[in-house]
Length: 462
Image (cartoon, rainbow, N blue to C red):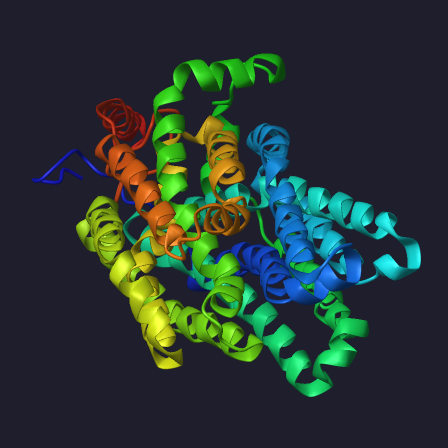
């Protein structure tokens, strides 16, 4: 079909509603499990640091935040391993393995003996489990987003993909609420002793549910079509070289967008409870409560933002988000400093500005690569950038405040990340409504011509 305002677009056939709902659930449950781990770790960091790390409270907390960052340093290894595997074996096979590894590592954190019992072995075991979690996540997120994008109709990819991020916030909120709920019910003494372990143990059943949902799904129609036409990359040995030499531009563009996305993301979701408690003087319960309200608000916004991106495109929403955050982040941080209510309103406003980015990840990033290298391209670009600028954000923010004494350093860091994102956005191809099928980058003239040739070659019905 020819769009009078742009290149020809190929609208994919809509899968049956039941199949699409199962695909959304199978994709989102892995994201929820991943972010459930981040939620309980971020919201229980004071308990974890006291139980598994040496030193005074402030020093132990910094070590715990650094350990949180360590899992992100191995994510690129997971991306390099799982990405090419997902392009060869299929999205479903890889996602079934990664969710079990991810949930299993989180579950085992709840079983680690305390530092008082086994000394530095407790810290070492936690580091190893965080690395396993990071390695599996290196394939989980790129695979889940690719799976969702390839199942969704082309004209609803933003709306369908937004539910993957609803899963992100639902998992994080669930973890945060569990940690907050246990702390209120059990009290500080019990939480310090053993109560902090309970939320980690919940990851086991979550992983089993995710494994079950994914085992009931077929691989994506786009991947099956590629297999049928044998449109695969040359060989295992040359795939990485081929990806870097042929698709270096989308790799860089996506990496720049992920800098903005994840510095904002991990500052708001993972570091904010620590910031509100230690820097602004809120109680532990207040510091946990503020982001939970903000995340629930964002969960309501995400489907509407995804639906809007299907109508107006991904780039306008990203411009709104990046510019809005750059201009308003400092005033909103000052608002959060004013009072508990100010903290709630300021965080909610930051969430409103961030939601257009978050809602469109699963529609935007998979569409930056053609089908034969989509999983690998997404996993590598996303995880390299995330490991450097995402998971390190909580520790970097804490370090910068300690170095400068300026409580607004997280806001300045966020502004710098938004500038990087704006530069990358200039070079991003708009792909709203474009087909993900074929071996050309979606949204390009080459992809349009390839789809037109395939349509002409297709036998007439009847």
